[in-house]
Length: 95
Image (tube, rainbow, N blue to C red; front, top):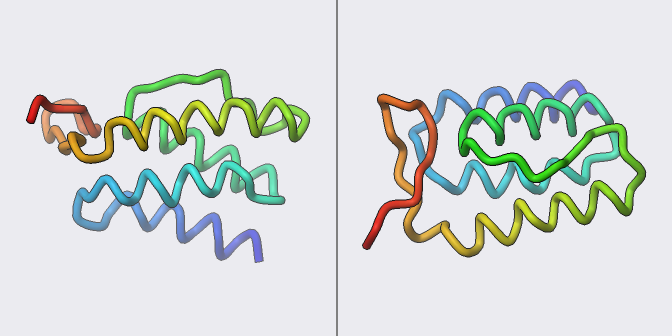
């Protein structure tokens, strides 16, 4: 159910700070339930400090395009993402 998926996203914020959680959140941007999509993008914006114009209530094509930007950012930076306890978000670091 959407309630279970929503709670699962929230639980990801308390697990060890592994950038793979961003991958799960990006995947949730395509969820059928708008509330799940809203939570996913809220958590992504907090956890990665990026904004790609994703709006949970947009039409599917607009959402897909913005989610694609999230996916591209993540794929480009995933090997360099490190949790910063001070800023409380993932940040790309030089290797």
